Image 1 (tube, rainbow, N blue to C red):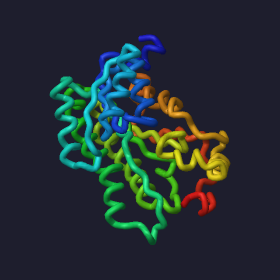
Image 2: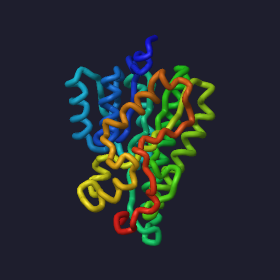
Image 3: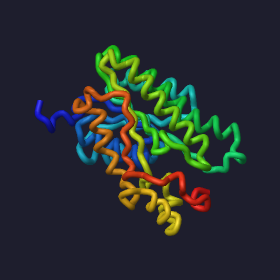
Image 4: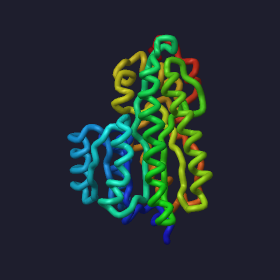
Length: 264
């Protein structure tokens, strides 16, 4: 196999959550271009159909399955349904998630639970169910999405930060257990990207300026800049890489010192 061929995903079934927009959409498009059959997952069926049509229009293959990551039963049923339809699962990208900005003393237990159900519980269930066919196949790739806050703390983001620390721990635990089955598990920790989630910051000139000043490269990432990391971890090029947290953040620094006025 040639060096470039190591990065091909031909004949592999890849599941991408949060695929209707932002980083998930970019990864889905990149996987399809690399040769994978991509199963797009998110709540918004219309947006999913649009991404699927975009993939097909470029000669790729894709299908959709619409469900809410906070809906436990829907999450439980997703992987078995995909395996029944496609016969296998080779790659799982747990990208979908939500954030929550609020002062710690004003946060609610209900919102905390929703963040953890979406960002951690759904990831745990999807990974557990995907691991079963991967073990039977003798190969698989699980890629979880953490955040630049997976290794630090951030004010006004208690639930989100805690959930992303949990992602890091879950990733390493899965990697340690499934490695003997040739199933790898790694995480990508993105920084500030120009996505729908970051829209309020990007649209505010002063707020955007302060956030950019915390990034070594001085700019927000473009969603297409996450694709290379995802393809690498999903491909044979990363066959001996597991339990790692790959930061794709432009060199985020001094994030903890952002003024409270711009983190509200």
